[in-house]
Image 1: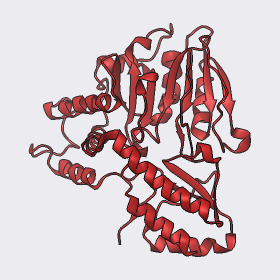
Image 2 (image 1 turned 90 degrees about the vertical axis):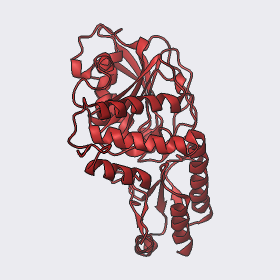
Image 3 (image 1 turned 45 degrees about the vertical axis):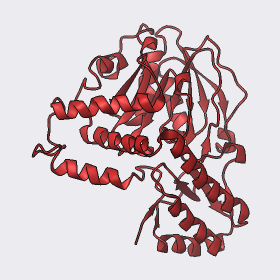
Length: 352
């Protein structure tokens, strides 16, 4: 039976990526060696890293004033690396938007480096909306936001104009919609939500903003060090970088971000349409802030829970259970999820 993978992460990837990755594990580039055992300094892998960095700037339409890094530690490491590299050592102050669990995690770490002002929070409403009326002036070293909140199913539809550096955690919706990436000074994203397997984190940073804090930064946590070594200051996560490159090549070869956005919009419209039509279901968030990537919803009639769960499992649907902190259900519809999978889910919902 065909599986319909709605997992929030690690996420669904294109079948082409699995095929090419599997081939590389057995024999990379006809070398007779596995991708898993070659040197990261070898000519073959250096070429992979170079293209993996270059394709990001092509897709984002960014110039040489930005640098692309592939790092370990997950997006959670960036919760600390961002303030370490951007918050001044004396009287450092940053502004954060609190829109969910991962934004709250970033705030917690930043407070260890200086003053953190939370300009808006929806915590008291169980993160059911995106705060909107706030300003970040030049007294802040940077402003930090999270573009999409996987647990609660909310997404920033537009980004504020700020008078300081703009930092964004785009872990769960990067490359899913057309965005003016040049409005950001630093973007980071864990690969496992939309662009590759777990084990590598993408960082895109404007080089001119670095080295301004007066901090003595440990080398492994210093963006400038990683830039100087072209993402090879230490041994990079070779396989996740390669699989991410394959995923981005697949995206580029299939219409790029604009085409992906059109497909994602159609999938979201189909599922939200059924939720709004069907009195058995309801989302956790306000309509204007609904995520296109992660649709969190609940079943309003508990007596139908067993029938619903049996039906979607029988239909080959996987990964639909909601996050343990919220409950309900969550349909994560990343770039590689076909419209067909959403149609299967909607038909199950209609059958109740």
